[in-house]
Image (cartoon, rainbow, N blue to C red; front, side):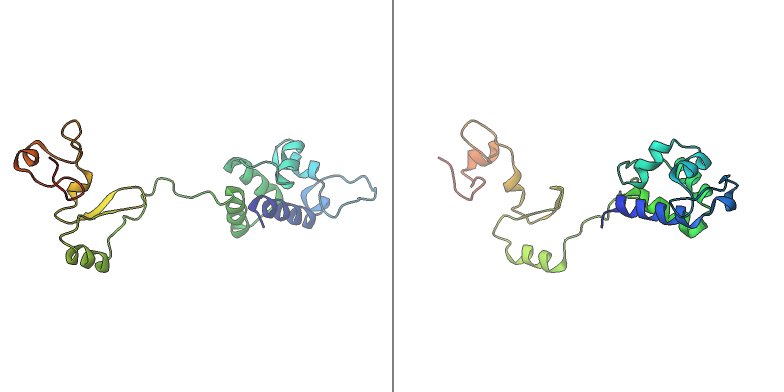
Length: 172
């Protein structure tokens, strides 16, 4: 079930539990078609437009501000737990704490052992965001920039001494 629909169901359920007499809304003695408050009545109590509240309840509005949510919580007479739940539903699964840094990636001991065992093979371990997490002594050969035309992966010093290039073979 998506969170917009859950938000709408939560608002509708809480709205149906409030009687007009509880919040001081005049009923004029007529028969009501819905249990509890009407959408327009709740919107008036919360200080938002009836159309905006209707869109929230129908799952068509996605960015309710914390101030609007607090106004709705006051109008619905929600307790602290229900208020927090309302805010969580309205966030729609968006990540909270955007300022938090992600947990740093680490190379497992098994991967470190593999790097050590395969010491004669150039190895570079990349993370999720292409960060270099680990390498062996030959690993930099894989990421070396070309030093001249037609000589990928060779430094000028390596070219003078006939050292291997990126793929472990000497270039003429």
